[in-house]
Length: 114
Image 1 (tube, one colour):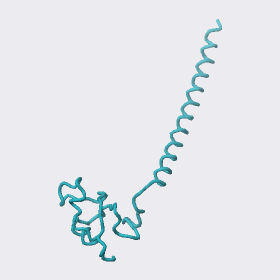
Image 2 (cartoon, helix red, strand yellow; image 1 turned 90 degrees about the horizontal axis):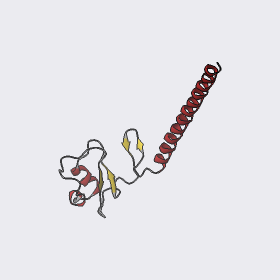
Image 3 (tube, helix red, strand yellow; image 1 turned 90 degrees about the vertical axis):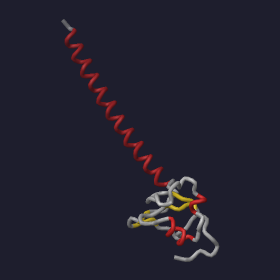
Image 4 (cartoon, rainbow, N blue to C red; image 1 turned 180 degrees about the vertical axis):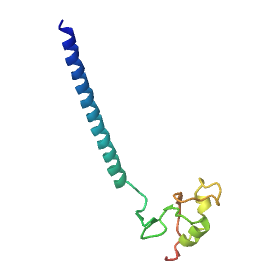
């Protein structure tokens, strides 16, 4: 009977197709990951990180990212904006400020150079 040989070849063909599909999916996933990481690096609006700290030429842009160890009082002194809490309604507790928090700052004209 010729049927067992036909099944043998169709199982081998199915395995080859499954292996090729797995390899194709792996390449697609790696490509998407690389594309997303390159696109993300090009569109970042936050300052670059240098040695664990955010570095900017101007310390107080309109959009400010809180660094480790900073409080609203130190940011207010550094940027010359005493109304940080009023301009940022998402800050419900002024004592609960954490690194990475994005706040809006409007520096005063007489901003102290740091």
